[in-house]
Image (cartoon, rainbow, N blue to C red; front, side, top):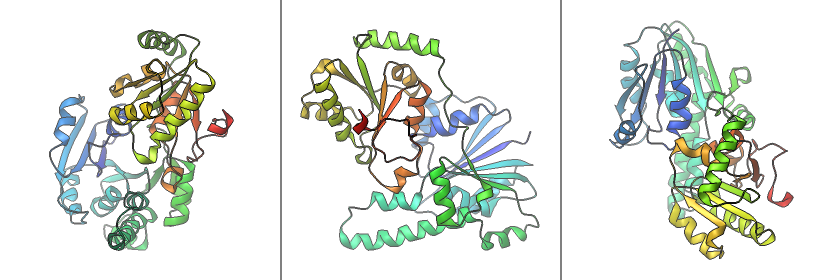
Length: 353
């Protein structure tokens, strides 16, 4: 089987690298090569922490400044050292570089992983900028949107570039959700028959026996009774993740039913501690913890419901949150605010509680 070359532009230090990039690649029954574009040396701390099998090799390309198509020359040099290979690019910028750099005589298949909306995310990040900076950000958003369109639609421009290499390579766009697929088709004019829905990075379902054992052990550890309704939130305290709405929702639940408990798994402990004090939750009604990714399912198993609130925006609507998949892996009910299309109709909204 041809080796896989995985091209990463959003850094090994990204919080989802281990769960969404590394874990799916480790189960591949072939050699895997990760080529990552890194701005600085902070990635080395991640590499020191993680253990990699001999079948996986990581190569780094240093990048400076903003996105430049000349980075494709560096990628071409890397790819030229391989024989036949399957190529995977995470996101539109990595895909754009790969379109330029791949050799259709060597690349047997090219997969573009569409995991979000880059231009919309940039627009959202700078939505509160001062008015004169918004002009610059609006122009940059347009440029990023143009990059996305070129990466996803495989335009005549790219066809012409690849024809100079004599053959067109077969390719697929792998979206994380049906909503993202619809958006990519309508907005970037991508070919519908080239788009698939990703499944490799969906976590495996936890066996019932293991889940029950974890549930009992963690509840004992947290001093939570078996008949207590446990709500869980796993994630950070970014504004778009609605941390205040999460605490407000639980406070309402607690006042209605005192046999309720909130488990928060986060790295942003001080923010959540301030919020629970603001809503005057008693200390016996909640626990805020920071755990490793390897422990996540063990602690989620102790809960009955997972909370997933997002701000209403297209970037959230088309997403497939990692935490939602983790909630599903341990059969949690999911309480959401109807801002993520991937949440099914069977999932409870706060109004249904």
